[in-house]
Amino acid sequence: MLGLISTYGAGGRVMLPRGVYGPQEDTLLLRDALEREAVGFGSAVLDVGTGSGFLALAAARRGARVTAVDRARGAVLTTRLNAVLAGLRVEAVRGDLLAPAAGRRFDLILSNPPYVPAPCAGPPLRGPARAWDAGHDGRLFIDRLCDGTAGLLRPGGVLLLVQSALCGVHDTLERLERAGLPAGVTDRRLVPFGPVLASRRQWLLDRGLIAPGDEKEELVIIRAERAA
Image (cartoon, rainbow, N blue to C red; front, side, top):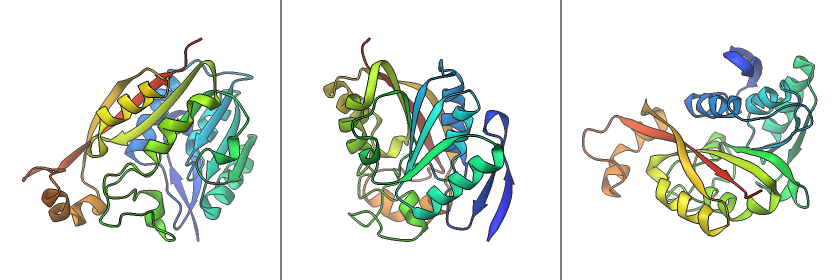
């Protein structure tokens, strides 16, 4: 079943079927970071974990040539539909993180990957939790992005990544540095726990990821750039 949700600014409006990850606080924070980048006609942009295609459409509206990747078939079909409805050209493909982009080079890579720490060590095989669960430390996908992004960026190319502070901001910065991508935090935003984190409060407490009384998590934007 499709529903129309309203969003703001360069993201426009998207159709959102049940089960497809829609624009939330992390998406909007990443959209704001995208708007500060020098993306225009002819820029090659890769959106990894595109969900509804919200960020892919935002980049396409600025004239970029956009490739959007998601491992969920529903997300890929939704992105294609939203691109058609918006009159924009987006190449939406199904695949595992960076694999569909192998051998190509981009000026900008965007990613809002699954990053929520979860009691299950591996990624969910099905269901909506595939959009957010990422192993005990929340780094199942972030580490792979850090390791594989440099080879897909053109000289001077940029990676914009959104994640929760619960899964280790310093770890991400160090891993990107080792991969040849000096990085820093450009944006921070505190948001109330959503239903998923609220339901895992005791588990998060037991693992030392939150303190008693915590009601908010910090979202961060990490920006990394390949040397020109």
